[in-house]
Amino acid sequence: MRIGALNKSITIQRALMIPNDIGEPVEAWVDLATVWAAKTDIRGSERYSAKQTMASTDTRFKIRWRRDVEPRDRILCEGNYYDITGTVELGRREALEIYATRKA
Image 1 (cartoon, rainbow, N blue to C red):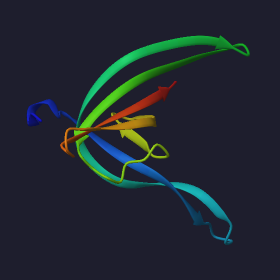
Image 2: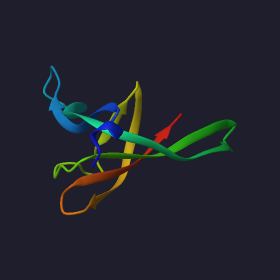
Image 3: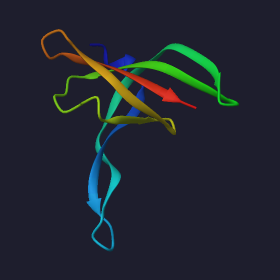
């Protein structure tokens, strides 16, 4: 994997249930890791539903291989949040492709 292609800093986040001030569990996103990635926008779409326009962008991130990235996580890149939809291992644990969707 060429290091020069990894030109975006991304933060992988995971939702955890953390007790609030009165002991009730609430969902909070915590940083799992900050890594360098190659980002490629694959497809964008827009639809009109319930008098609102919904837009989304499908994106592929390529990072060095990690075993702890799961579809329940999300990615923060350049101020935008991407919901992870799937991962694919490349080679023998050389790299990881992460497929994600950004909704606007």
